[in-house]
Image 1 (cartoon, rainbow, N blue to C red):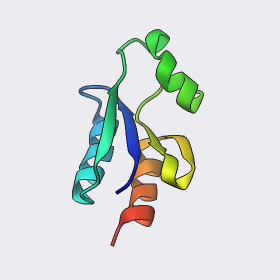
Image 2: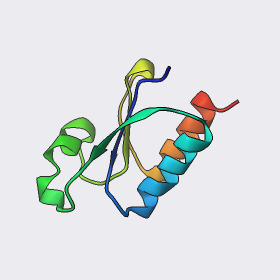
Image 3: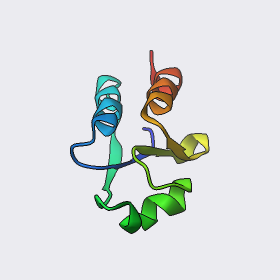
Image 4: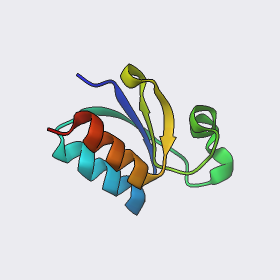
Length: 82
């Protein structure tokens, strides 16, 4: 089973796009909700070098902190799609 982590913000449409793809592919993931304030997003900044979300971590495939929802969706399709 994939070892996926997603840094997300409640109500974020870009995060919702990634979650929809994770669900479509039947992938389990660990969710990390980040604070609304960018200045308080130290955890996601440590992972990805920036404070925007969503950010995907896939340790099994060497992905340490992929930002940008479109890139994440494409990566998930290419890596885990049928």
